[in-house]
Image 1: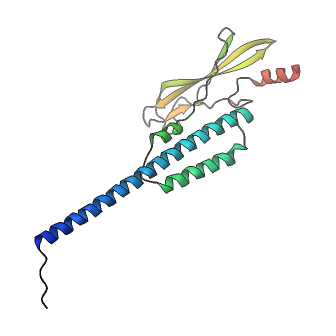
Image 2 (image 1 turned 90 degrees about the vertical axis):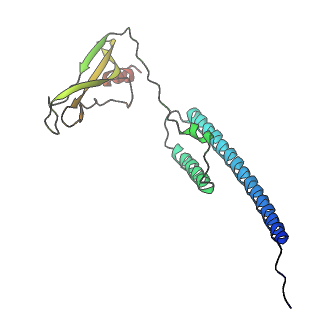
Image 3 (image 1 turned 180 degrees about the vertical axis):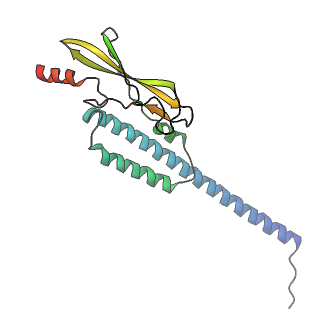
Length: 197
């Protein structure tokens, strides 16, 4: 028995059949990718909504800071990590908005109050690292409300920044210790308020 060699028409028919199968498979893969992308977008949006709800709840229930929030935030991070591991290669613009750092507002004290300016210079006139000359490059300002002889005044602490011309190190006096972190009241003002109550 001799076998007959396949003809060109058979090869062309087989190629057309394989191309149709590959095309159908590509369509199925594209549909599945689109479905995964939609599911990821929905999940990211859901995470974002839940994060906003948690933030709103935290502001209502606990104020700015609370130790009770740590567990909820860890669970949220775990969810985000699991979600990123499930579909690692795609990126969404929805998630990018949640990465912004929230800047706390700076409260200004009444500009009509009398002010006392204190300048805190670094301990040395030269760079402690290399002994090079220092040059001024800016300063930090902090204000605290103080009570002096039953009159309010603002104590403005200025800490000039210097940079070394030799080693480019930045030198600045340490900030004064405050009674309350990020607070605007001096020790004397706090003592007056506590004693007045």
